[in-house]
Image (cartoon, rainbow, N blue to C red):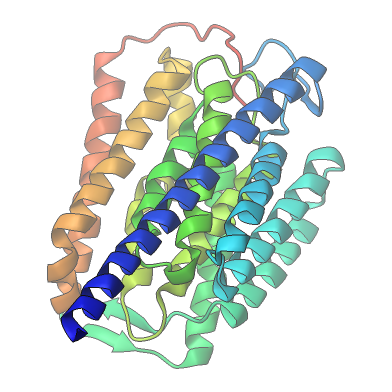
Length: 362
């Protein structure tokens, strides 16, 4: 009798798991379809156009409301997940804060904000995230190990990380598919460490994928600051859900290294010659490759391949990094080397050519 009951319980658990997975996949598909449909509507209605300027590389005004459509479709997917109890408290906190990030972007897309105000709003958001989602609990020190840090220091580090990555993603949002493909890989990297946010994060992937179908090939719509800030925040903050006592948070800095290094090198170059760091420009390495004659898709694919290599290295070296912090930094070095090799190969093999206007580069 006891064995029969145990067997029935096992069958019930399998059915429950299958039902949960089905609902999650439905939410994923729903988010993608809604995002794709809304993006098509925005393109047809020419809603929220990004005008052509001297910094632009697109020939015609193009909607920059893709981020809005992603947030709307994600909201619909969350409502589909809620009746099944697949949105836990920590996921609500992450989603609410992501909406806050998107709100900053919406305002900036339609009423450009002063850089100081925009940065202050991001700082407030990051502080809230460090309080609601948890601080960083440990740091990898080479030749020493994983060192626990006080909560206040962990909160300060989390704030710095979130604000930094939000701006990195915002700066790198300039080619068809670049940020979208990065988001797909980055979210995949944190799905299993983000606890109760698994299904909402998966739905986010679906929404981004729906947007990409309207963006990556012909660039019919942009993410806008709404999308880049919301995606940047979610990718930065989700690893905080890994919780105290784990090193799961540190997966994301490695995944994002190809983007971080591009932005860091560009800022250093501009700072050395006294340029205004808050002024819009076209000096990122990915922009230089585009000006050299590479297509949007080729450059975006090169960055995405670097991020994918980073993901593979994280999977391969993760167990060793958990044992020794030095392996973490070895992994970081290998990722930078892989990214630099991909970028150098593109720079060497593609002959310089006039940059023809193409829809669109922001």
